[in-house]
Structure formats: structure tokens, C-alpha cells
Length: 506
Image (cartoon, rainbow, N blue to C red; front, top):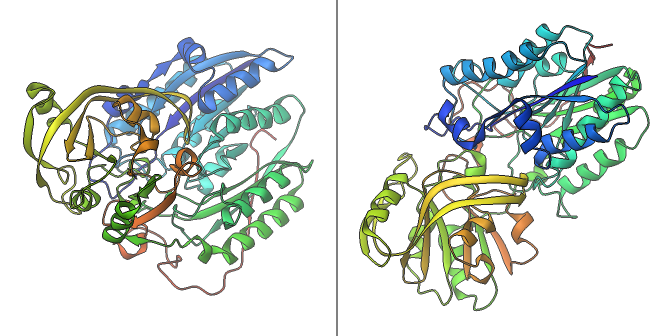
């Protein structure tokens, strides 16, 4: 028995003007063939696949295809799409014959001319393997699921948590669904419902027992314990995608029971729709949040600058919060990050201890920020390399390149060469700083940072600032989305009508 595994992972933000290229994937870590199986056996969805398959009594041969990851950023170029498509589909073509295919996808990868990259890839793979070979894929819960994706796959298995602390477990769940189909003979049928709504990511917090997201999470877990249900998922979608078919989605996959799939999908979609307003977050102005953090004399304040969230594909060099930090005399460190490879190169030439007057921020995208000139002391040089676990990751290697720490008073500005998790405790620790001993830490993340900080912070606040990943995205110009769509359009009523798709391998 030969089962192929592979990964294509990137979350696109179409408001970020910096394109995603082949180099971004290669830098993050393209791995092919047997090396994929050897290196990824305890990392994220691929690790969940590998460890699960190795535990099957049948001991299938695990055929590594290719791992193609890139950090969230702007639209992928056409050449990049062509390369990605050929890498994955070509590797699969070379691996035939196969008994099944198990893929780790994101679900919100957009390329120039290709608004539904995962749909294109899944359709191409289905044409290649034919209707009899099971094809199962995992997705981020911020996937923009399309009918094309549903038709091509036998089952789509979604993360259940935000922060995404179940990526490895989602790989295990994907492998379990594949086993039900391939070994136990399950006959998958999917009920799929697109909901005409898009919600902010800031309150999609399944760790908060008072939140609507926690309620949905519990419902999904309960559903997957029911015998006819193979998997159930809610995708609240990446909001910063100006593409057709944008919207939240619910899907339920059962073993041959179309009525259960349809009825459960309809009920879940109705529940999500009825609670849509509960996703709207409370926001603080930048100046009031920074002032409150400054006036606090003990404990850590964490301020989410979600509009410049690098986990949401923003450029990572907004300086709106930095400007406010510089107005105060901090009793303990104030920590903030920027992406600026050119500045890192200049700092390396000057060396630790030198004084530097230079423009900071507002260089990668000058629509929402402009550079500000600040005099700092070069306090440290380091390589931003570490292994991340927690939100988005289990044992995932991160390399954000040569980096530096600039200091103005007690404001510590961590400058990295490349984008990455600009919230991770490991980033600050690699810089020689203790994030949990700071007065205030700026997390460039809308929700995922909570996995690391909420239990240890005195207070967490979400600030409202301009950027490529704004909370109030519906106030920005979208030209390609389908309408009506809430909250762009005020819609009081909506009735779900789930679409049914038989798994092609039936």
C-alpha cells in the first residue's frame, strides 16, 4: 500500500503589495521525497500524517511528494503558481501508482490569475489519479473553501482551534479520515455551505470559554464523535482576500449518509450566521492603549497590532504603535518589531554600541505608514532562528534571517530581515530579551498570540491602526468579492441550502 503525502501552505493577503515568489518558498524550506518523510515526522500536519500512518497495522509505504511552505504575504506571481503547481502535481505524477493521497493545504493561497490555487491543485490531482483513489486534504480554518475544492477531494479536514494549536492533531484527524475511507470502506459524502459573511479574526478565539468561537469548537468536537460523521469543519476565512467566492464556509462529511450531512451542515451554518455579530471585537486607540500600558507598574501588557499582523500577511513594518511607545519613559522594556532587511545590513556594518539615526518603518508599504526618523543605539545583533511550537506550529523551524535590536531609552526595536511570527516568544528570546518581563509587548497577530501570552499577561488589548490586515476590513475597497456579503451589506435574513458532493472515490 502506497500513500503519498505533501504540503502547499501559504496564506495570502491581497492588500499586501509585496508579491510572494518562488524564493519565499525556497527560503522557508522546500523539502522533497524521502527527505520530507525523514525531516517532518514530528512537525505540524505532515508529522500528524506520518506518525498516524506508521501506526497503521498495514504499515503502508509513505511516499514523500514535496513540502512547499511560505510565510503569509502578498499575491503569488504567475510564475510562482506555475512552479508550485508543477512541483506538487509533477511529484505526484512521478510517484504513481498510488493507493491514496493525503495533502496538507492552507486553503487561502491566491496567485495572479488564480484566485483559488488549492482548487486548481486539487482538480489537477484528481484528473491525474482518477476517481478511484482517495484524496484527503487538511485546511486551515481561515481557508476560503470553494465548491471546486469540495468536488475534487473525498474529504477536507479543518483545524478546529484559533489560536491554531491543533495543527499536528489535524494531521492525525486527516489520516484517520483517510483510513475510514481506504481501509474501512467508508463512502464519503460532503454537505457544503458557503455563508455570505466574513468576520474579524480578533475574536475567533477558541480558548475563551465565553466566546462564540468556543461554542462552535465544542459543537464540532461533539459532531465528530458521532459515528456517521467522518469530519466537520467551520472555515471563518482569511478576511483580506479581494477575490470571488469569498466567505465563511461549513462542511460536514459523513459515511454515506446524505441526510445527516445535509441536516447537520444546515444547522451549523444557521448557528454561525445567527451569531455573526459576536465576532465584532472591542478595540482601543493606539494612544490610549499605550498610555494605559505605561501607567501600569507591574505585569505585562500585550497590545495586538493586528492591522500589521505578519501572520495575516501584512508587511510587518507599520510604525504607528512605535511612534506612541517613543513618547513615554518606560520603567521596563517596551518591545516592538519591524521588518527591514536593508536597515539590518546597515546595522551590521556599524556594529554593537554604535549610535544610529535612521528612518524606521513605513518602507515596505507606504500606503498606511511613512518612515519616521529615530536615533537609537545598536544594542544587539543576532540570527532570528528558532524552533516554534504553539500557534501555527509544532516543532517548526523558523529562520527570519540576520536581525538586530535597536534601543531608544527602554524601547527595544527588534529588526528582522524577513517576515515571520512577529509575536513569538522565541523571537524575543533569540534577541536576548525576556518577553514576559517587559512592560509592554506589541504582538503583530490578531488572535494567535494569545496562545503564548494570555495566561501570563496582566492585560491584552487589540489596538486599531491602519494597515494591510485591518479589523474593519469592510471599510476598505474590495472590487472582486461577491455581493451581498455581510458586513459590507446589512443582511437580516439568510437561509442555508447545503450543496451535496459525493466523494469521487465512491
